[in-house]
Image (cartoon, rainbow, N blue to C red):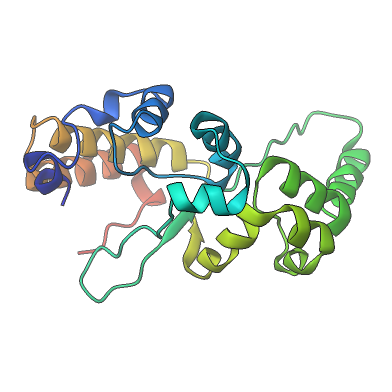
Length: 200
């Protein structure tokens, strides 16, 4: 799919070398039809395009789930859990208390609405502040039906780096898709050993 998209001009052959700023600039400048997007970008997009409100926004920009990899398959959205933990502290109980307090519906909804980040509890979608002020989040909520998360594993960074190298090799024409897939499998087995299971 990636090689097909590069060969027909749908994707630039050097896209994996672009910075996020370049990716956003290409979209805002009308040089690209679409991009992978997080709802937290809505504020910057509205400012860049001079948009005011939900109707104005959705007349200019639409969203779709990431398409299925196979015909008849299920679309998918992918997110990643990020947790910052400092284990070397005498205040572990206080840290746990703060996380618990920040995870309560009222403060978490205020954070979600203020930053356009999805709330952590589906029930928050019924809260008045979410409904009244979180129009982008309300619009994105149905997309959560096909959302998943990257594995919460200490080696996910290594895994992603190896897969990225394979994707970049195909995109830039350095390797065929088949050779890149073989390289990725071999590198994953070498780097991650028993932490990865390769299925045929």
